[in-house]
View (cartoon, rainbow, N blue to C red):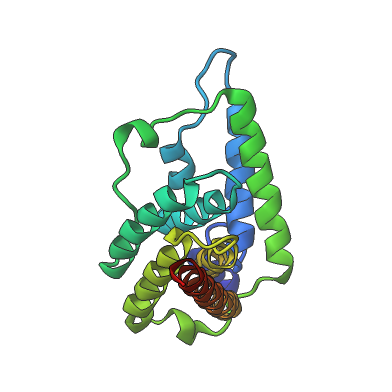
Length: 222
């Protein structure tokens, strides 16, 4: 009995796995929102971040990185800068990022709020099937500056005008965000692998582009 009580004190969400705790939290928020009277407002971005608790900076990292994957011109430049600023908040150990008030208070209607909460609850539930707290040394406090530098590096690669050069760095940052959210060091290793491949791809394609430009200039000048 004492052991069970101690476990519940450590884990008020009912599971020792962060993914399952988040899944439960978002499911309960969905049920509460569905039970509200008609005409009530939906959730804002700030509300969604607050549901993640002290890990809202990791949530923003994941959100910004996912937006960078969208096939929309210029989005990598805008959110590459946003990721660079986020890396500074990460470096200083802040739990959240100061968003513009208009952005923080953007609201979905109730229908889309419920759908978003349900999607997040299901996503975290499935993540809990394979994600486990492991490789805790990857998340030690002294690594915070290294991860901040990693975010800044990936943001730079995303910002550069390299065709499809934003995909691998963006997925690297998604893996980093999930690794921090779920306390899973294996996802942090995946972030390093994807990011390294993204940097190599960007450098290789940039080098090829530079050689082609030099050759074209030599041809025109000759």
